[in-house]
Amino acid sequence: MAHTAKDYAHLLGMTGFSETLLKNHFALYQGYVANTDKVLDALEAMAKEGRTAAPEFAELKRRLGWEFNGMRLHELYFENLGGAQAAPLGADGDLAKALAAHFGSVEAWEKEFRATGAMRGIGWVVLYRDPDDGRLMNFWINEHDTAHPAGCTPLLVMDVFEHAFLTDYGLKRADYIEAFFRNVDWKTVEARLK
Picture (cartoon, one colour):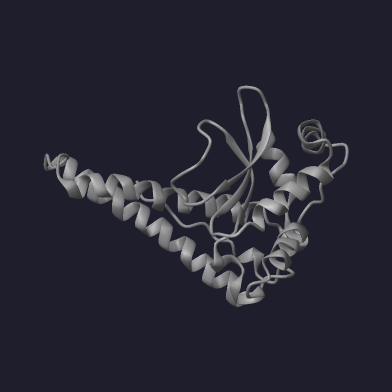
């Protein structure tokens, strides 16, 4: 069954993100969707042909994590942005209470999340929830297919690959992070907590 790229055109016009940057980012995401299906189709064909011991099969299996996670992380990223319709983080909501419980305060969590996003390098910053103990943790994810904490639920996803900000902000990553936070739809993030 083929994956279908989701339409995020409603984000166009979002404060702090140019139309050029967003359209380029949407196109990159669509490439991940298309490549996920290409890799899955090739793997299925090789399995039917009995070629699972071939080096090409192994390389495609490794590539699948990159393409699939690139697709899903972008979906989570775009979906936790809301632009003009973004709901603010409610001080009395479950998410704010959980952030305060695990980080001391919402402000302390945000400071750490922003600092993680400002680190040198490319990747993702993800606020995860461990379903075993409910703990919230900020993670730096270098590559789509590595360093994800097994079994944890992504709550807030921020893309810090250059394509997410260079067009609008050049090397001023902190300005991009500020724009990102102005556009987070906290209602979506809170729904992921549940």
